[in-house]
Image (cartoon, rainbow, N blue to C red):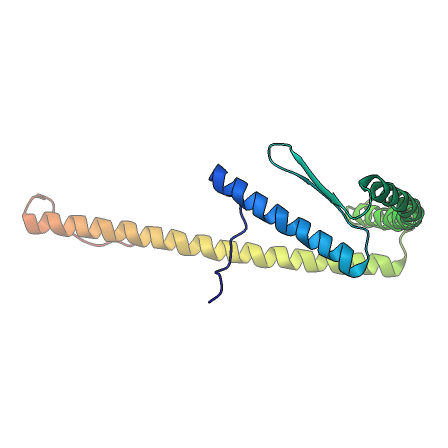
Length: 185
């Protein structure tokens, strides 16, 4: 029978947390040693506990592993920076063009600088405006219908309340008025 799945989250009990840290640290160091021996790899492992205590393992000297790592990082960063710089410059040019196009489109849509537009662009702008106006009119009609339905419902509720109130008064004999007549308008 296997163990259940362990939920990975902080252990609240400090003594349990310390025991788990020690066991897992030992297991991790064991795996690092096995990797170094089996694969003839240079392995460096650095662990700081929650109390700040340093635990480390190095298959050779930690200093030589760190020096090697820093040299590789420097080369990677130089290569990365050059490629990255070119990519970002191209991206900036594309974004600048896109931004200028959006500004032109916005100013045209607001009716500014229409003289520099071609006939085709003006026709397209007119079509977009007509489509937008049609959508606005449709939404307005929907809102007007909804307002009319709600006001009709409110009016019906008011009439119903008045009728109920008048009928109760007549039944109870409390109203000295003439018999109730319903007037809708």
